[in-house]
Image 1 (cartoon, rainbow, N blue to C red):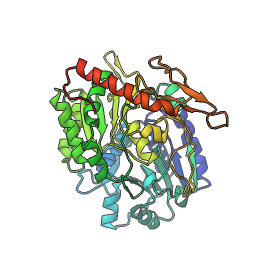
Image 2: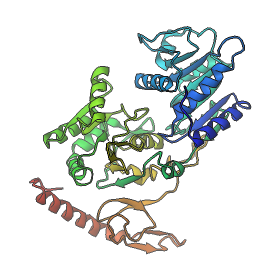
Image 3: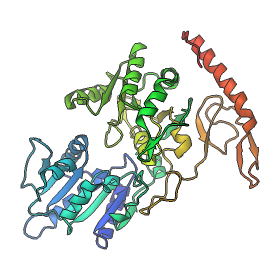
Image 4: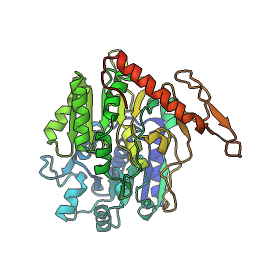
Length: 445
């Protein structure tokens, strides 16, 4: 029995089906946590039921084994238990099942056409469809309808997905999801900003090697521990690091403070990774630090805190990381009221608020300098909460955020630049005082 769709999910499904009557390839965009796979499962059931003499074949494609397993479990929970998995030596091999959940790597490696061919192809994390692997797959089944699912339809190379999809549907806004309790609001702190001058750009984003060195040579990790203890102590946390060595360093730092913390990366064995994440979900581990593993398709609603220590020029990557902690959760009287983002990458200052409703497009963006819209924010000099630039008083701590009106001659406002040096001195004094009060001997530099 399929899960009952929420009103916005039912609306998105109707709009998608109506659009696919006109365009064979449609991209469905919904925020992380809005239930894209749930909507897809309902569409898949309808597609299978519409076969004349036999059920239509449907191919659901993902790019990582975690996503394949998650998609399979989601289909099971929605009543579509009669499906097979095409991924390596997975035991759930059912070649004659009408629905197949497949790893794109396995499909490319085997180069075997599914017979009969799928009438519908559903692609998870469809912002990746510009790659050669997905192009080869779609070329193999030119008559299939294609439904792409993503929360972030912009690519780092700024090539539009209009090359693949004929139209796009934005299913629901963050504002609607938060108001209805389907997502929680986020509180963001930015107590440290990395110096990214001189960090080379590789493939459109910051060099991981240089970022790793920059973070390991700084005092940012120590501040991560201190700020976590200050605003998020005891809450389950996921940290996004700027490299494997950096991720291990973060885990070791928290462990040294007596906090249950572990590390995972792409080379962590599947069973070990699953066990670590299971302990995080049960609350046996408080912090899991990772590098490039949990950015997409990972769900763990009890996690309330995200440590961003991975600067990126990619709006999609930023939103995917921050989106991991926005799902609501409640158990035995314990309830997640809001998510907390500890931003040690200045990502919010670059990209804007993580739950901002953006106007996505299928067009190329070659002339744009940033993957962001104008959503100016600033950091409170007292509590380091990230707030909208229009606030003159911090809504978090009540501190005065001094601004000078009309500095651009156009009626706008900006922080008074001459105060920045004084603010920096005040920041250092406050951090050093907090370190002394909490038993840390090392001076903050």
